[in-house]
Amino acid sequence: MVHFRRTAVIGVASLAALALAAPAASAATTTVRAGSATAPAYSGRVQASLLGTATVSTSIGSGSCNESTLTGSIQSDGTGLTIDSATFATNGGPCSGTVSSTITPENFPWTGGTVVYDTAHTGGRDAAVTIANFRVRAVVNIFGGITCIYGGNLTANGYNPDNPNRGDTSVAEAQVGVSNATVSKISSGSSFLCPSTATVSANYKLLGESTPGSGTYDQSLYVTE
Image (cartoon, rainbow, N blue to C red; front, side, top):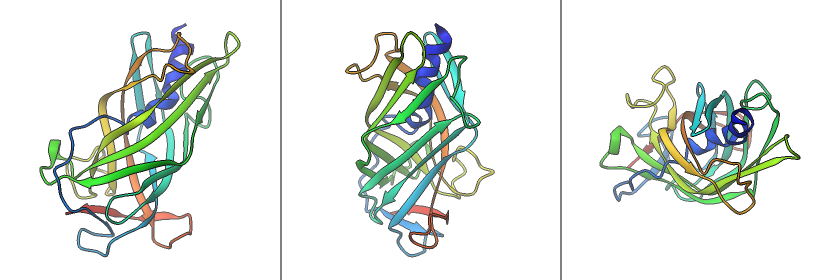
């Protein structure tokens, strides 16, 4: 029981790790920039890639996921953050557990997100990064299929490439992450066997495209006032 219910939630853990309802950023004019804090403004495609391992704990068990990628786009003023694809796995397979599961992000695109520069640098961050209208379904192949759904509008902490508070200081790129965040189940469509909440931790690096439309994410990004 622990293993299959753990598997049901672990696929959404890496997304939920971007989704802590953090304190609101201080009001400021936001500019996303390409290459440095003084470089030209950047609007375009972005990709978030998991650094290390995302972990999840519930009242019935815990697990981890070591592969996750989200792609989308952002406007240079921090508005219009849209996610149009997301993947979650461990070594190409289920994120955790002894029973296989299918993790399916739903309802793309996830629109209405924002990046807001935080003049107060709450908790050492540079920005608040909000993913709006996300929804992920996990179906575990046991007892005919156990379905768990998580979603909502949620916010994470954003760090510039030179911020010493970023989650992985060995990676000199913009990062987005949370520690011990709580995500809640969407009751409609979810099995009663699914835990109502999960506690998650994860960290992603965030890159843009040097060549627009190339699909190659190699551009460092900064968020400034």
